[in-house]
Image (tube, rainbow, N blue to C red):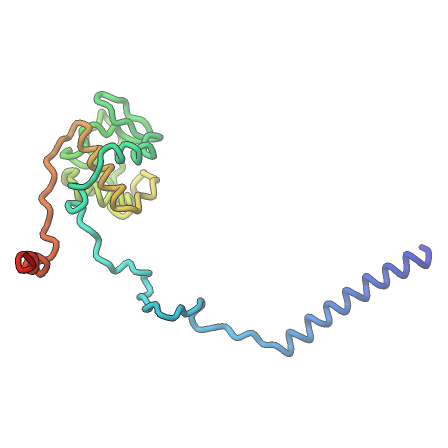
Length: 192
């Protein structure tokens, strides 16, 4: 090696030693303090519980169905077509054909489709509330189900899909809308 290479190597080695020394010294001098609860407090915002606001009561699907749109449901249902068909007499795929599903027994029928024991164990018939629960989270309604779909998070999307599925061979009458709030109903006539 020539003297120029030795000089460059000495500079690189010296810079590394200085950087390492600075890291050790600053680590001894500054001690990071970890907060009890990570994150920042935003002024003017009320603190929610540890559940992230999930304590709000879910909206009953019967209140959303009257304003639901089957055409929008058909658009959202396109997510389902990778596994399901919905035409009359359609073949089962990865999932069963969903024509006429609402009103049928859960986990039975559908042209010999092999339903999971978890879904068979739910029992009852597919009604609007059970379909809403299923579309929210299939694994919550039937733990251990074979269906890997995570669910639809937006209640409006679920209402639209349920209305679309109902229009495809089931045609069940929509459930009655529950009273929104008795106090609000009493205030309505007085306002006139």
